[in-house]
Length: 166
Length: 124
Length: 233
Ligand code: SF4
Ligand code: FES
Image (cartoon, rainbow over all chains, first blue to last red; front, side, top):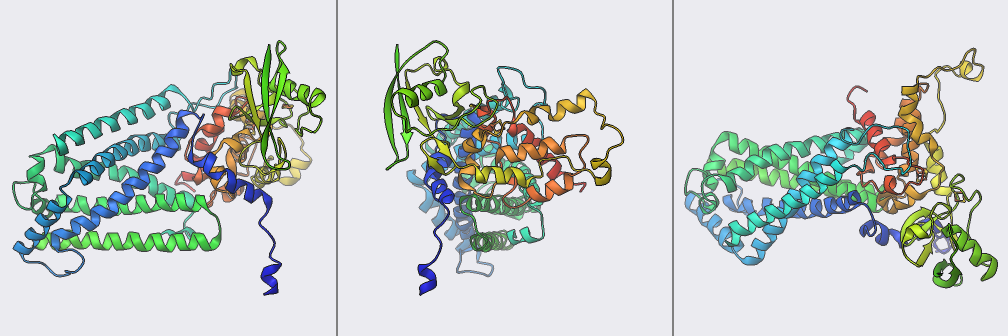
């Protein structure tokens, strides 16, 4: 068709943005701590979402999975559940759970920080800027909570390791 | 759910997002306590061994209700979060519409499927 | 002492060109670039005007971080290899010169001027608008913005979302909303409270950490978000 041949190319601005997207959106090199938290919050959110999906499907097996939509007999349900637990009892899934424990804990505590910040708490009051221009919203409390979330997440992972492998 | 964007302001959706997060914190904490911090992990994971086993938790109304709340909160929070990421990655009316519908469909399926699990497990 | 300055060039293909610059005391990155342009290669394209962090035209990425070239001493970089690139999140016109059309259109979209309900009175005022010093403090820092675009180029959301107004525009929206003389809050909230508006800020804070004028856009955006989230409206 002639109309498609004459289609206007995308504006150069947009093309240039796409090119820099992966570099500056995905990888927070040479950035502040909050920028790392931004990426971690995304990665952990997506990770936990995927786990949530799997978890709902997996727990559906208590009552017989997708194929059964009436109340199952007690023994059948028990059998189904035991089969599911046996299937999930391998180091690969357990390792997955350890990682989910890490991500979930980080997401929780960093999310709390964001919750308060987004309602305007813990980010300081606007004031006249003075040299050396330290931004008030990037304060020690914020950095502390980010580090704390990371540490608690690591502890959660250690706890999960202990429960699942210990 | 997310095509509500035509009727709800974005700030209202995000308000729901933030408060569903707090809801998850509470209901999820109860869920985790029931699995990890009371009784033994092995027993809690078994079908009917002990007072916090799978079936016992479902049969307790308060616990089952917490699980149901957790399900709804997480479904909203997770899929709204995915929507945010996806509409930030690419812009356009068509893309936004498809993201909204597909994610709403998956979230709705998960809520229905999870609710079914809770309801049927209570009846076993 | 000498430093090596590698400059990103856009023609014929994007590549880096190395220059060796004799270091002088108090030399800024912009001085080094001007030295290279005067003595080594006249074809380097860059934008600058005031050389004192006032005009906001010399924003560029120095060693991977957005900075004002005229405001960055070479000694403070603690390295004698300097790499200058054009800003991210903007189309490149040539070498270090980037296209700010999108940036300014976002700035204009948030009504960056005082809005009064009584327009007649605003045009022909009978007396001054009075303001207490504490009321000035609330927005003063945001009014120091020089529109250099560093925060815009550092923002991860801007990198992905081309309809997101960016930290500068949102901070300016807050600057006018927080102004006690202004009455245009609803008008601005209508502009920014959309699917690609203020809700797409997730408080990464890169904007605040790169701003050369001590402005804290991240803080302003969170305070502005509080207005959009309030249940009273
Ligand atoms: S807020 Fe700061 S970094 Fe952003 S444009 Fe204004 S002066 Fe530049
Ligand atoms: S030349 Fe004016 S800000 Fe650098």
